[in-house]
Length: 145
Image (tube, rainbow, N blue to C red; front, side, top):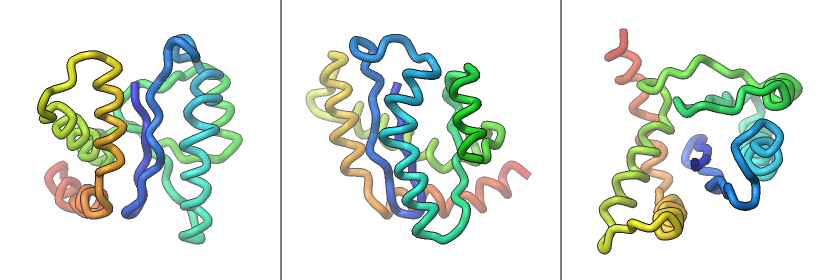
C-alpha cells in the first residue's frame, strides 16, 4: 500500500506501508505511520497557505475504518466525501505513477525494487502533472452528469 496527497501543484511525501515494522494495516498503525507523520502535516500546511479549508478526500482504496481512525478524522474535522474515483484527481496521479513505474527498463519485479521505483517516480511527478489532473475535473464532472 502506498499513500500520498496532492493539492494545487504540490504533493506530499509518499508513504509505503512497511509491514515488517508496522504490522498489518490497523487504525493505530495507520494513524502513527501515515496520517500523523505525512498526510496531516501536508494537509495543515496547505490549509494555512490558502487561508481556508482544504478538502481531505480519500481515493478508492480502503482505509482502516476502526474507531481510532474515525475518531481522529472527526477530531480534525476533516470532510470525508464518498469515494468517487472518476472525480478524484489523485486517481490520475496514481495511474501515472503505475504507468511510469511499470515502463522502467529494466522493469522492476522484486517488491523492494518496485517500492524504490515508485518512490523515485513519485519524486518526478511534476507540478504540471498535478495541475493537469486537477484541471481535468470539470470535464470529468460533465462526463458523469
